[in-house]
Each structure stands twice: as C-alpha cells, then as structure tokens.
Length: 197
Image (cartoon, rainbow, N blue to C red; front, side, top):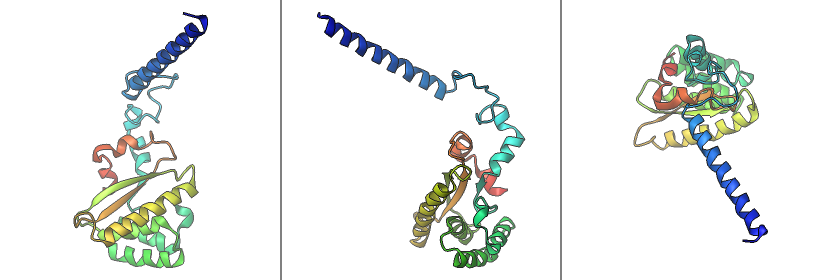
C-alpha cells in the first residue's frame, strides 16, 4: 500500500474508534452508569439523585408547573388574570372563565391566559393532559411563542370536540431551556401530584 492510502486508512480507523468510544460513553452516561465531567451526583440538576427527590426540590419543581393554579408569566398578569388563577386554585371554574375572558379582552395575545381559560372550561371533567415545557426563565419571548402555538392547538382541538370526545388540558412547565430540570418529573404521569396542588 502506498503511504497516502495508509494515512487515509489510519485516519478512518481513528474516526471510527472515536465515534464508537463516544457512542459508548454517551450510552453509559444516559443510562446513569458513569458520571462524566466531575459533576456531583448530589447536584440538584440530576432529578433522580437523592437531593433531586428531596421535599425542597419537589416543591421547587411544583413551582415550575401550572395548569392554571399559579402564574408562570407574571409580567403579563392583569388583575382579572390574577383573580382567575386564584379562582382555579380554589376550584371556582365559572369565576375563572369570566375573569380569563376579561383578561383576554385586555390582552388578546396572552397564551398563558388562553391555556388557563381552556383548562378552566374543562374544570374537573375527564380530560387528557399534556405538558408544554418552555424556557420561561431563560427566554421569555421564545416561551411565549411556543405557548401561543400550544394554546392555538389546544383551542382548536377542544373546539372540535376534543380527542375522541375527551378535551385536552395543558400543563405549562418552566424548564429554563434545561430539560434535566423537570423531564424526569413529567415521565410516566408523575406530574399528577402537581395538578392536584
């Protein structure tokens, strides 16, 4: 073989080896087998760590989730929207509907209010619930754009009779553009406790 061909084969072999090693490391870290980068497993950004499941971190996660019982976008909070959130938290859905409609008359471009209005219209009836994770803490404009799309889709689904007759609720989740913050809490329906708070 010529030296040119040998160099190409060596480079290709090196790239394949690096790729396989990288894939193996990724697989092990994603399964929790090893800890890369010197991060402590007690770091609260690891939701499955002992610290990640403490009552304090559970409360912090609960503050990041809302189906209407708390404001996650307080900068757009009209007084009627604040009253609606309190009404939803106390189970008074009729008052919440009225207050959210008044709030949307003041600020038609408020996706959080539209999502909460759709949720209040469902009230305690059987529904499907999806979570919309948005970066409220790190990119408020991006979060609002995502929520506008979610609110529009939810509105259209519910106005057309829901999914096989079952309406759709939306749980807004602030993940600050870091899926590790709440991802494991939303898997497998483990967020239900937050809907009941």
